[in-house]
View 1 (cartoon, one colour):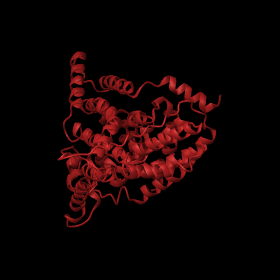
View 2 (cartoon, rainbow, N blue to C red):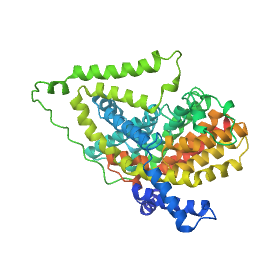
View 3 (tube, rainbow, N blue to C red):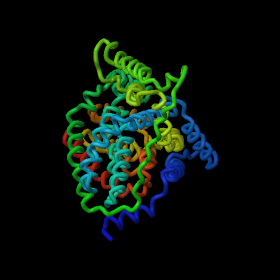
Length: 464
């Protein structure tokens, strides 16, 4: 048995399900909050009750950073999945299977293409990679060839390590909104609100020289690393069976029901939605900027493309029925992580974590410490938007105090947030549902991706 096999088997035995991880993190946060934030004047039971209140407030948070954001993310994931199930995307995926003749080649193809798609949209990238990985598994199953399927599943998850540096990244998108930084800071003491920029444009964050360099390193180094891992990977004995296509319904439709199956109607609605989104984002504003790239705009365009690509509302709804199951984990676990967030904010634990990193920072080291603190917080709160809402004020205030570039501070938070997705399996839930893999199958290989990403992001932050 190779070292890779021994390590993977050990890792699998130690790892529970993602939901259990969320429960354990909740209990751990309770303990940490109690130990590090309990006021001396309060009794034990009284403060435990306070912590319970913080947790419950976070659990049912109905603000823009809470259940509203959760619904945005679920919709983004479902619409991305619907598009990935369309004939055009299936055609593209089938073409990508041609060079997939062994584990190494397949790992390279899946990693490279998933990174590219995820830089456009995290939800589409996650589902695109998952379906590509499953199609590969089905192909090798039919041919009776050997394949390290967990490695391919990990390659399909790599998009969650690059998404926050792409055009759907929550922190850069929110920072690009007019007045977001000042609203984010609010009445935080010690901050010179008047000297805060009104916005930080995406040309300074996503399209900066630093981030473009980081993206190029990711596109070159990570697929090559997964190719090399595929050369030494072991065979997996549980490959997926091909999904039988649904029989074509030749039933004639009458009356208003014809609208459900009309290509023309679906085409018109899809084009109208896309035209409205384009008009509002590009034509209506007096000057063009990239600050229109927010979750609502992305969901609107995904909806328009989903209706176009599925050629009828009936097919769109049928695809939605398949896609919605991938959002089950978000529906069940997001409230738990909002509860953790409520605990960390209400008790002040998150401020203590960030302040601890800031207190040992200098102008040169601050982006590095912000990167690590964001990675640590993401383990407890795997939500880029939620993390920006809570940790963003501390990052921006500290950047002002230390004289650090705001765009670099924002990207340091983004890199840290996305990196630890490779060791926090929450966002892997849709992928696991589609591929039939388990979290403990892919995590030995996502740990390898974590180490590669750690090196690349640190180099990017240190060079610029």
